[in-house]
Length: 174
Image (cartoon, rainbow, N blue to C red; front, side, top):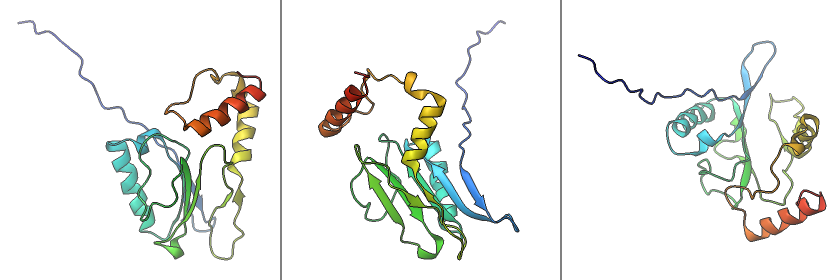
């Protein structure tokens, strides 16, 4: 007999990228740099998988730099959670655990610079993420494809919304 067919929803595997800083001679991982994605911050498998990976790094001799530029979703767990912020950068140096450097920020604050931990005795590069992102936006021409008429999601605080409107008006986008 003929049975009707219907497709089933299938899980979609999403590859999450990250950076590894390795020692040249041994190829040992010195630092892992993670830029959190929406999947890392939403409840479910993506967050669970990321938290397991995070725990592995935190339990190792590898430094962790975690960059959260997303206002939506739950922040990554931290004891004492630190200052209230929309965004944060966490630098966890293996020799200082369980303590970590927390760089919280909100709009209109610039993204704070932070040092990437390396092997002892190595000069640590300071990342100026604000300038780096602006360079990417300029070189990729993203300013012409972004929708400046719509409000961001999730909604900004009233103070941040006022600031954003003023910045966009000054730039000629609104």
